[in-house]
Image (cartoon, rainbow, N blue to C red):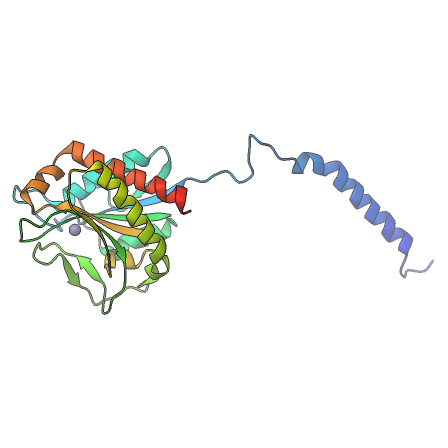
Length: 252
Ligand SMILES: [Zn+2]
């Protein structure tokens, strides 16, 4: 018998494969409405309480350290989000963490959002209000929040390899900042608020939508008092959570 092409054998072989698919597929391919194949994943939010350890941040007239307010607020936001999101804090206690480590952590866990939390500081005691920053490169090196109230930002020359990766998320970061600011404004006693683009080092290496929230001026006596008030911080935390919900509902 010839060992060459045999059309009959090939047809039989194909028929057997087709029969196998018919018998197996109804069980394996049938959709199960109770167990979707692609279950909805929880979003990962990285909260970054500014400063820590020897870096106290700005100092209030009554002796309140910015580093403590930022950690208190981050913990409250985490509590607000714990049932709906995967939440990671860049620092969980009073220790120093450099700025590139903060965004590196967010990139490592592939966060969906990065929120750095600070308060403002100024020698001008009347300086007040909430500012929500998104990353916007202007020129020169990125700026970093500084510990000295007279210099809220200091120029940094040693740029990270991730410099400016935040540029590609600028539009979504700006939308997120506006949504969050709208929601915080519903909740707080702070009368002034604004949104600004700035080349902040704390945002430049984040490879996801990212904002830096400066929640009031700790150097302003009235705002320092508010930032020491647990109920005020709790309201701000709810505003942040609502802003996050809005962002995921409307944008992603
Ligand atoms: Zn700060």
